[in-house]
Image (cartoon, rainbow, N blue to C red):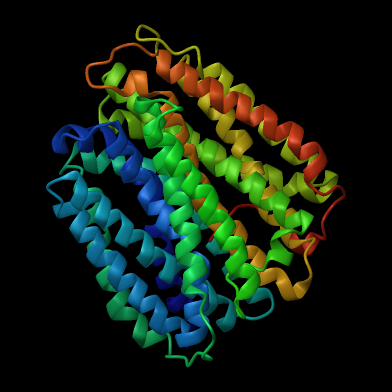
Length: 461
């Protein structure tokens, strides 16, 4: 295997997946105008990708082990590339959401397979450097995504936020077989029912949350999906207890470090994508910012996430994960509270941006805390499963966070709405959730400093 070219191609493929989480955020208002999409449809454009990505990611890793990492990666990349083309060509919301779902499935196959190839091809210090590059993609992908989303939407049009994946995907598809040899997997049992059940449960949860924005919390359209979600989550636990090769072992999920990591990751990612979702619609619908202006304003926010993650990585090795988690969520709460000062007449650079940067600087260390404290406190034999669980909740958290704030901010997201009451209420919810997360972290996040070998500076899939 030609290690360096392979690493470049694999990281390029992963870069596409990360960018697609944030690049659509900036283009969202333009997509809504061109395709005549309402609030619910715009919410699904964001959440469907992360829902399928997160819900099927562990299954993708199992398929890579069973059928070979390169074969699974090529299948995922092919699907992701074709789905990106479908999204760009979409003439209505149904086709766009379907394309986003297929993108998520492709990403769930691609990402764990690429990581498996890297960990199996590099050894010793070279593996640590390769994984460092892989982890850095998370922060840089977010920064490039918001800027690229603005440039493409303001230039050739929103469809190009999807079209840009096509030549990159084709390049990697053509070049990868020459540098990564085929591998034979070990046929294993694959827990398809478990993966589908947890994905369906989260989809029902999102549907109920989104519907509550218009129908109310006491209507059948809200309560029935939420009840269905609870039933499916319970069914998922039963499935995982009974199958011979469970997707997520209940014993591993019940470990305090894993519970802590999933909780922190869920809240951190939910807060990040929720704040991006609210901000882009406020900037472009209320303040009439262009997509390019929005992308440029978001750039320092994305940089703040990366800087916060770097600082969090250093602090965890010195003072431990618990105080870092508490401080991270306290900063997130402060930032979200500062963002509630927005109004139709106030400048975004003096109200929205300062608070968003403070919140983003707090979200970065939360990402690091979730991965570091988990991986440092689980047995070595459960490290792979624990990592898969954390990364699953990284994606699912974004879906749930966006759905929740979309429902709360519904009054300001309705066609023709000019007030910001819905936005400020949703931002207040983000602040309250972050305060609750800080208090919960006092008792949930393990105390003490993790081993230096586990301290990282970012998050990756």
